[in-house]
Image (tube, rainbow, N blue to C red; front, side, top):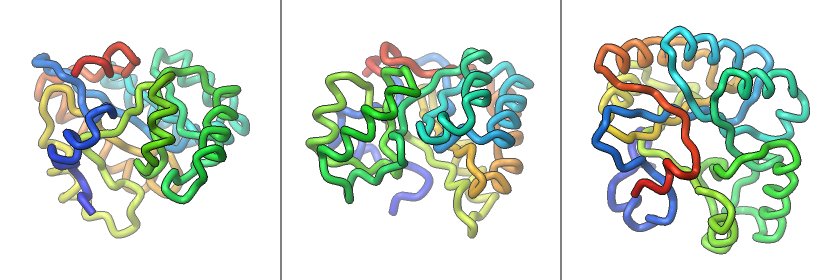
Length: 209
């Protein structure tokens, strides 16, 4: 519905979630959802290393189970990780107990105080329970890299309209890779030229509101 950017009224309405980081410094927070993937995630890590950028990877725990070496590579590169459920559950269509059980199952593979609901969809009861343990991290900018009909120029233009503290979403997944290969290198170069520092998230940073 909102496509690339989340309106401020939505962010204020759900203010217990982290939509952006309150800072005046030129800091950006890149995030990658749905990995790890044995080919795509290492490519992303190489791009980030080229620009001395840190990021946060919201991982599906079933993928962590399948590709533990790739997950270990994320950690070894000093990026942050976050819980993205075990089975990539859509909170709107999942019973509260079932959803929380899936998140708890993911904890066996992902040790983090960061949580992002798949699709950004989560019920109030689910969020209330999870906020006791996690920072629930949403985003200010969505690349829509997963879309088979993505307008590349439109996405790039939207993702360049950042401000200090913006949280940006990409996907290290097969569905997104064709688009990601085009937009990520260009955006990393742009952010560097604009003087932004790209950092990983943690729960303390998410508390800067």
